[in-house]
Length: 128
Image (cartoon, rainbow, N blue to C red; front, side):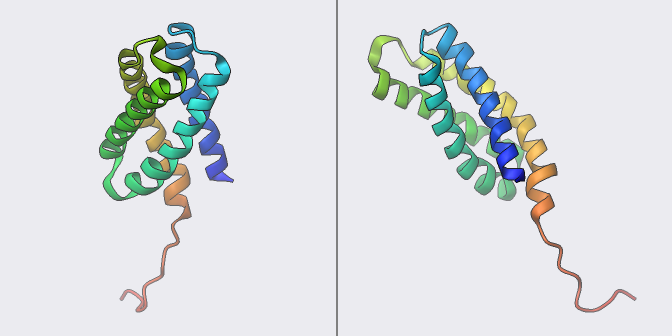
């Protein structure tokens, strides 16, 4: 249940950022923004938040999310919606804003979701 609430928080954050950048300034529909956000959230949660974050820390995971957001917004934008607009600057702005939010999201995730699931193994021999 904690993963579901974390995914929902992340989806809202990413959708808001992408809607402001891609929807309001670039003219993409809300449905298109929601589609891009959903793909981005699922991919970055599995790769960045569950694999990279626990093993490397917040800085590396935030940088990985920056790269992933840039690549997906730029790549999927050009693939699905064509070169109607230049996708470089919207992808760059989106990457910076999402990465800023991810820095704080990772702190929440480490404190409330990831570390709370780890099971502590009691020592074999009691302390003297």
